[in-house]
Amino acid sequence: LENVDEMLQQFRGREDELLDTLRTMRDRKDRAASPTAAAAARRRAGATRSRVPRRYHPVDEKPA
Image (cartoon, rainbow, N blue to C red; front, side):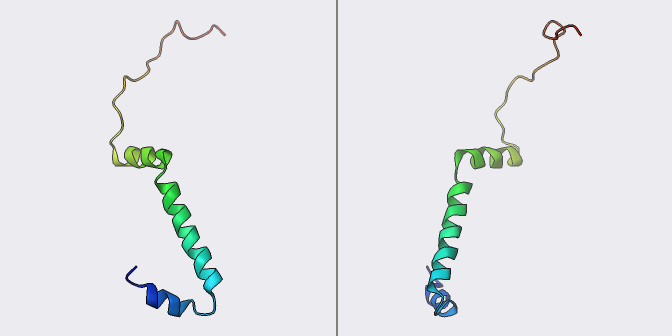
């Protein structure tokens, strides 16, 4: 909120555009905070859950 006066001056006469811009920023922030985005961020950071890797099991494969 430190630059509110400056933002209002820049958008003088275009208040609807300012509101749309702020709503878009809010929506992007909300999407980034979703559980899916948080999991993706953890994967990118290398903080994935440890799990046993799936291995090839000939018994699981169906004959051709």
